[in-house]
Image 1 (cartoon, rainbow, N blue to C red):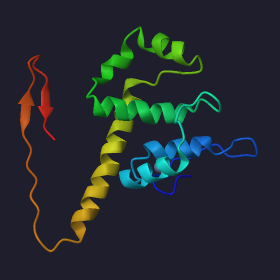
Image 2 (image 1 turned 180 degrees about the horizontal axis):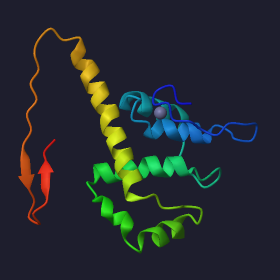
Image 3 (image 1 turned 90 degrees about the horizontal axis):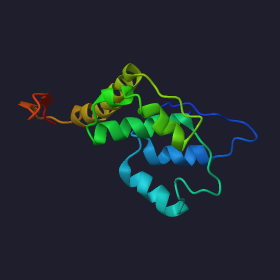
Length: 145
Ligand SMILES: [Zn+2]
């Protein structure tokens, strides 16, 4: 279990540690500086072909971060071409449902929000947050970050 985010991993004599090292690169609870330091120290290619193994939980974590970072609408995974496209990359891939992706994105948000709120706990001063709602050219509402 990751001591930072509590994600659980397969263990055993034949499991190795590659999936654990990969998780360090994507775990949102580990400071970016620490992740970079680890990556530099190991010099690993995250997806080098020599020792590659498929870890569905890693793929799901990366997809969640991709959807957040690129602001991809969740309904993209409902396209009839989504699963065939993903399975062409990795036949073992099984598409998650839109609700699962949504829940994972909310989990990433809450984890980040928890870190942010902890940073403010030690302050003696007041902090105010403000936000604004925008409407895109295709009439979609956005809450700006
Ligand atoms: Zn973690």
